[in-house]
Image 1 (cartoon, rainbow, N blue to C red):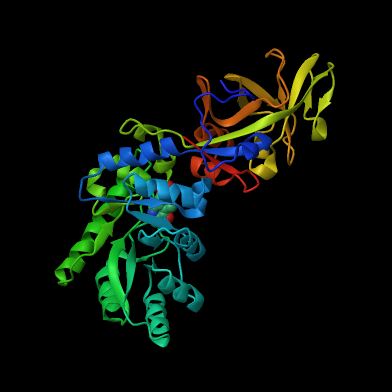
Image 2 (cartoon, rainbow, N blue to C red; image 1 turned 90 degrees about the horizontal axis):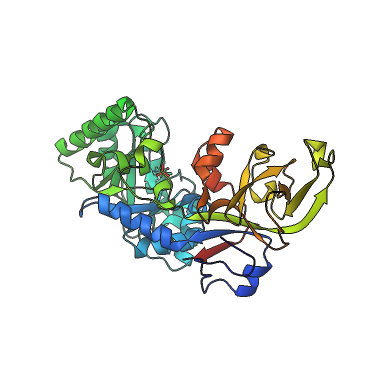
Amino acid sequence: MLSHEQTPGVTVSQQCDAYVWFSQRAWVEINLGALSHNVQQLKKIVSDTTSILAVVKADAYGHGAVTVAKTALQNGATWLGVATVPEGIQLREAGIQAPILILGATHTPEQIHAIAHWRLQPTIYSPKQALVFSQELEAVNYNSSLPVHVMIDTGMSRLGTNWQSAGEFVQFVQRLPHLNMSGIYSHLATADSPDTTVMNLQHQRFEKAINEIKALGIKLPCVHFANSAGTLVDSSLHYDMVRPGLAIYGLSPAPHLKAGVNLKGVMQVRARVTQVKTIGKGTGVSYGYTYIAPEDMRIAVVGIGYADGVPRNLSNKMQVLIRGQRVSQIGSITMDQLMLDVSAIDDIQEGEIVTLLGQDGDEEITADDWATQLGTISWEILCSFKHRLPRVAVS
Ligand SMILES: *Cc1c(COP(=O)(O)O)cnc(C)c1O
C-alpha cells in the first residue's frame, strides 16, 4: 500500500531528488530491479553462446533509453538495438560503448556520416541502399570498413531483402568497398501466435538463406532472428543472438508464452489526488457529462490526463488503485486531470498516490489489461506515456 507519506518497498534512487519526487503530480516509475531480473531471466533461457541484444528503441519503449541500456548491459545484454540514428547517438553521448544496431532504415548522407562517426551499425536491406552507403563512405575517404547487418525478409514484408535472393545480395554487399557484413538477420511476424505455421515457414526460409550463403563459401557473421516471442517460444530460433524488447520490460508477448519465464513489470504509472469533494445525486462529472452521479458520492480529482498518455478511450471504463484497492474512474478523462469515485474508501486525502499502471499492495493493473480494454497491444501502451511524466528510477 502506498501513501503520500511513505512508499514502502519503493526506494527512490539517488538519481531522483526527494523534492522532485514529492512535488510531482504524476510520474512513471522504472523499476530497475525488475528490469535486471528480466534480463537475467532471458540470459538463463539462452545458451552461453547466444548474446542478448536489448531493444531500447522508442526511448526503451517509454522507459528511458539510457537508464535501461546501462541496466541491461550490467545484467547480461551485450548489444543494444535502436530504430533511428538519433536514438543511437543518445546512447553514445551517455558514454555507452556497447555495439548498437540500428533496426530501422538509413540512407541519407547525414545518417551515414553519423553512423560512421558514432560507431553505429546500420541495417542493410537493398542493393540500392548498400551502394549509397559504400559510395558515401568512399566520398568522405572513410579509411576502414563499416560493420553492417544484412536484413533478410523471410515473410514480415517489412525492411529486408527477399530471402530468395539473400545469397546474391550478400555477395553484392561483400564486393562493395567499406562495408563489412558483421551480422545477418530476419524478423518474425507471428511468433506470439499459438499457431506456428507462419513462424515455421519463416524459419525454413531463414535456414535456406543461411545455407545458401554458407554454400557460397561465405563465413557466417552474427546470425539473429528472434524477438521476445521467438526467444520465449523456441530455442532453435536463438542462433548467435536474440533481440528481446517487450520481455525486458516485463511483459509477455502472449498469454501462452508466460509459463516459460518469470518476468516482472518494470513500468508503474502513478499520480496524486489533488482534490477530494462530495457531489450530490444527479451531478454531472467532467466534459460532456458522460457520468451522472447515481447518488451522493465522494470523488477525487487526480493530476494526470490524456496529454500524459492515459488513453481518453478508457473514460468511464478504467480502474485505478488507491491504498491497494480498486476504484473506478468516472467521467471523461481530460487533458491533464481525471476523476475517481472514492466513495468506498474512507477519508481519502489530497496528495495520496494513485496507481494507474503497476502494483499497489496485492492488486496490480498491467499494460495487458489496458491493451485488452482498448483492443490494442501492450507494446503500444508502454510507448504511449509522454515526456511530461518524469521517469523515476526505483529499485
Ligand atoms: C522492435 C523489434 C524487436 C523487439 O521486439 P519485441 O517484440 O518487443 O521483443 C526485435 N527486432 C526488431 C527488428 C524489431 O524491430
